[in-house]
Length: 115
Length: 114
Image (cartoon, rainbow over all chains, first blue to last red; front, side, top):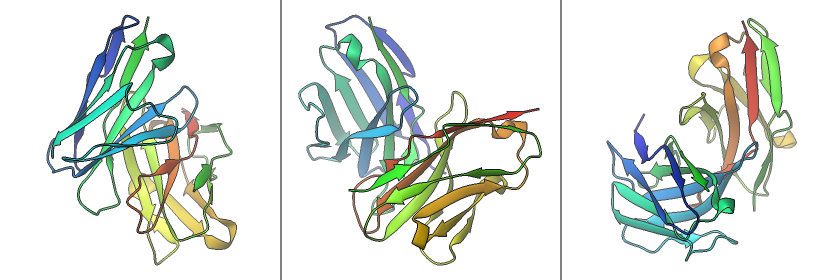
């Protein structure tokens, strides 16, 4: 299957700072990328959907000014958690899809800890 | 909106035992159904998927799932599990023809004892 690389896999930051997470499709062009958040023992919750060259579409309850998503190219999307707080600590996962195919491929996730 | 329920949060089996993980979804229209597996420290991987046709779907590593439309279910099965099947399993659904991404169940942690 196609490969999606997410970086970093783990990050610890101080409260009030910003953190950027990258999601790259290594061997295909990802016209659509998705960002999920997963709390311990819970399911993946979709945060936003981004299409290359367009503004991201955020799910209800997700603050777009806090979770900045950029999808500037067909192989890269970034999620920036701005002014992070301890409650933003979570596991963030991206997935990427090429064209109209309904199968998406997932990155390995990023464990964010805000102290 | 669709929702997915996985009733088994943690399943513990011995090697060679048979496995069945439940998945029920709620949606009024036609859906695509998926099972993903997440091995410890690794990313989500697709086990199998159902779009249409034969409701019994065979996936990788000996897994299969059966779509029962009348029950809104898509249970995952494997006749004989191995220690290497220890992982978290997620059922997911999206509406056919929709550009939206998947809705996931809460996941089932499977532990296989050697």
